[in-house]
Length: 401
Image (cartoon, rainbow, N blue to C red; front, side, top):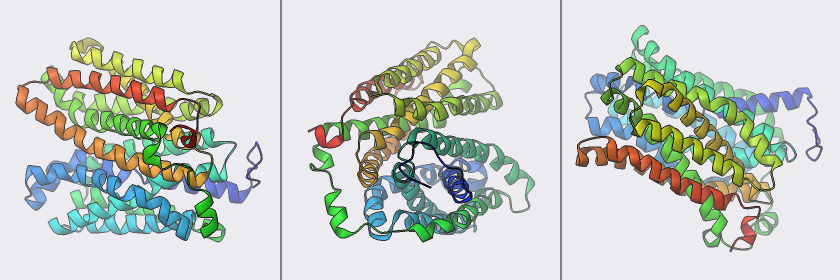
């Protein structure tokens, strides 16, 4: 493959590479989305508290925040291909440990899963910029769709597996180990291309200003955090909100599925569109308007149109996610700079994402209802608009001080 060509030459090695990218992407949400639908089984099986059960969804986000800044450094030292390969093996180990049936291994395995996924989250956007410099948008679309489809499937089949398997919830937590091992196997041919960055090159590729001094870098980080916070908070709490508005628990759960399915077309299309625009401000405006319409419909309890509001939120989420992923590559000049920005933004962003669901639940407890918490979604949407609009400015991080 000629990395500077404008068109991808679909040779066998290139096809294997693209399949490997899709498989790694498919492991970045599935181990997380399988937990929610079977949390009751896990609580009953291990006799753990509600606090610890809830913390199982927060541990990976905290791991993302802690590990993300170190992923670019390790990839420069050992090579991106090798780092991603070992992250898949670490992910498989974490999945196995988490499903062995003890509380301590459940926690340790969850930590390892969070650490492993951090590397894929941070490094894959920069890898796509490195290998497909002229087709980043299309490849980011494939990557994003694979991530979201697999995550949705994982959420849908974990409960049936827990009910239908003799191993119960342990089987539901553990089935994705096969996906991680398959990803490692298909990715293995890329190891022959693995090249750690020379020290002199690493130094020369550093931004001329530190990321923490760049206004654009902070805008990208805030955008990452806000779209993640909206996603994780809405996924966690919208079913409870809908039940309080009169929907059955089963229907409330399906509404979240509709939201996730509605993300898919724009999750693929937005990176391609963003790559062709000199400024991504129109996409920031579009995502914000879609979020606002969806959350306003929920805030005013227009439940007869609940499916419509979920489609709006799904389209908003797909637009916001696709835009955010592209900002890592569009606001940087090199693949290594993209990895640095990705690590910086995801470290900051996932801290905010981890706080969101807890703060939302706290507001519900304090106010005794859902009205004020729902309106905080609108506040978050306005904040997302401000930060994403700034981050969409057509400049590189080195030029944004």
